[in-house]
Image (tube, rainbow, N blue to C red; front, side, top):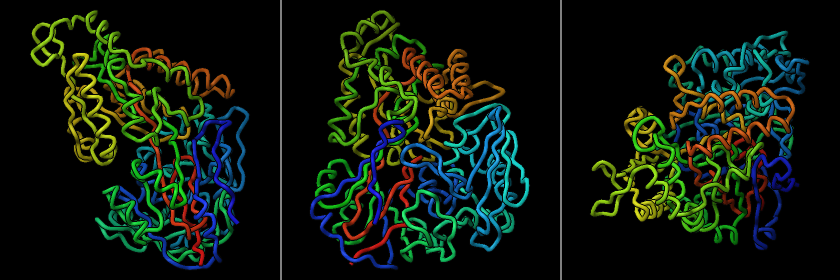
Length: 539
């Protein structure tokens, strides 16, 4: 039978709990083959494969990776059976499983692996894959059919961990080159446990079993093709409707259970709660333009609202508060002391605003300086970064900030608006909350790399350029001693926190509720994607 899902404690790589009520446990039954899993997800991605976490969730079902992450944080085989690293830490040589084929019949060989790395890095194939291994990646080449060599221009110990993410799923080069952009977007060809059969836009993606699947990862719960015949990956934006579909039998698994329903889910279904590693949901603070160019005002903003209480109340104790704006508590190298800074202190916030010269007040109680009100434009992703519960948390904080004299205008933005450039210029917002999943503190380089005219960094939404921070992160990224690397990552987190370049809020969570008669649904550990190739129904 299945292995129990366990929390990962020693490395703090992720927090994961698997829970079931007594009635769920008693529902054992006889395993059966076949059937269709109906899965209720939230957001519909623009393409199956890409650089957004919502794409990684579904592409994980279709595309295999070179290696995978085990529950204890160790790297395990997948398409690669073994690997070696040169003494200087710059050359990785992977030995591939023999005889694996993509679902178009072409071989998963070293040439295919090398092509994928080149596609991500040099052809714009996946921006998240690219920035995850930049500026360390140099080249990839096939040594022979079953050996591929990845060269780096300097040591980068997080490399193996980072390529366990779904962004590094391997596609068939032959199919990719022969097909249209639309076909590659909607039906990528991999060697995974499922094949994309159909995408009914606005409704669902239908995945059908790959009967010839031979390349399961070392972390799989069984050997062989998927046990079920099909997965219907449905998009249901409304949380109440999505959760209710379990009780009506319209779904067997649902993602992002509303926190108000979590206790009910624990009593009726199997549940999984995963705390995402990487950057938590925290505020980018615009240090380039507007009132937050003053560190005192940024710090007053941090002290001025009871973020911890708002998160605990707004999410009913299900989603943890995260005071560290740089990395979440599930990330190796996390500094818990950094998370303690800026505890709610409205008096301190007032003192800081006085020091910053915001000593006047208008009729609404908002602080003023030189006749101008202290009003913050806070732009947030509505419906794709923030659920309605999350938006309620922001509204509570808005009122608390008002009490200390900081006016906050909440501006909900669509995905197209937030990512399409409307709010990319520093003049368009003062603060914006977001997250970025990653199984390594190397995420600090992606988010906080300095942004210059010659080398802009669109991920640095605080527009915060700090050379000491940059050097500290780069030193951590190349340090091969884990203890020393984590100490450096901790220093980087402290710099960000001390300067209030970001402000913490809560961890990004993935929660799942699973019908009692569906067994062995488990989560991939680098990002928390559900895995259905081992799942089976019971009678």
